[in-house]
Image 1 (cartoon, one colour):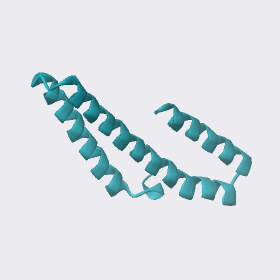
Image 2 (tube, rainbow, N blue to C red; image 1 turned 90 degrees about the vertical axis):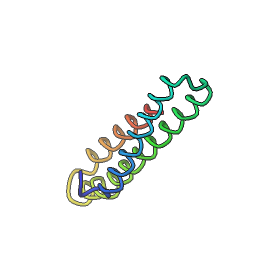
Image 3 (cartoon, rainbow, N blue to C red; image 1 turned 120 degrees about the horizontal axis):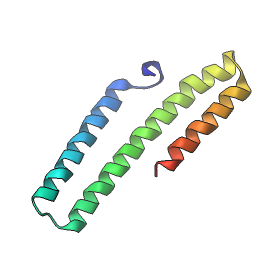
Image 4 (cartoon, rainbow, N blue to C red; image 1 turned 45 degrees about the vertical axis):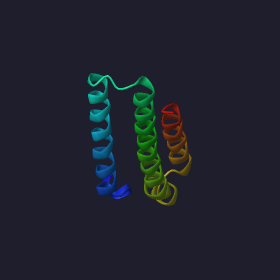
Length: 91
């Protein structure tokens, strides 16, 4: 997987998301208004979705391309379709 994408970028994004989730947890304890908590939850969802897009793009540019060029194109395309299906269920 590391060869498919910029792992440093993903780690940086995931650490930021973890920090956002921790901040939401604190907001609950601090009795922050629900609307503000929901705004932060949406920000985390968007950030996590972007991470998924980066992973999917890396998969397409490396694994799928390699599978089509050097392997079984039909199987590679079917597997990519499954990956898209899994990702699309996230939102």
